[in-house]
Length: 292
Image (cartoon, rainbow, N blue to C red):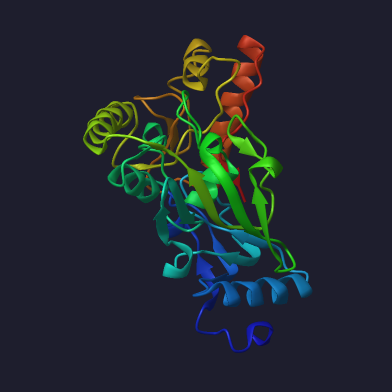
């Protein structure tokens, strides 16, 4: 591990990645690192970039499917406290990219700041939620984002203010290597009322999702105001399965990976659903999950 001399305390070789994803599928990372500080992160990034290694960041793993053969290069996880701090100043909440989106939402509500409660129940990290502009249909994270601090491929740190950011349906202009933190400018609200609303939304959302099995978040983006789940239903694909991967009985936009399911099973089912909807409804579904 000469490339990472002096960083052996945070770098591991051939680390299995399946435990870091909701599907519980995927082979090992050539190098896997959990830096404890921004300085260590920058050092890791510069060394890997200098050696020509691919670099990826794994967040909450709720929208990630990894090949059984694994991943070449360096995989980073921002699990250390340095990347998950959440602070409040006035009506602005600042959250590290490694913080859980749920923790950001609950902190805002507790502090009497409204805007993010609509996103309750969406899994993943703040960094992933920013990059993919997490949304609930009626609200999205981008509309409340005041700035984002990122790290580029060369280790340089840049702050993007609101004017430099672009958010659209489940996507953003944040394409840098690492999202270190985000600032969210919210509105005053009543904590008790927001808590009741959040609890109601949580119950509704969880009733529509598969529980207790290996699955990720929504597999496809909605299309033209139509939910991907309804399109899969309309195409007559609700009972589809490939190997040990099958469409959820609760929500057709979720894929359940039974024990023993492989990458090829899940990827094969994704392609079957995409091609089926396109052939029968002439609509091309776009995946909402990342595939490594």
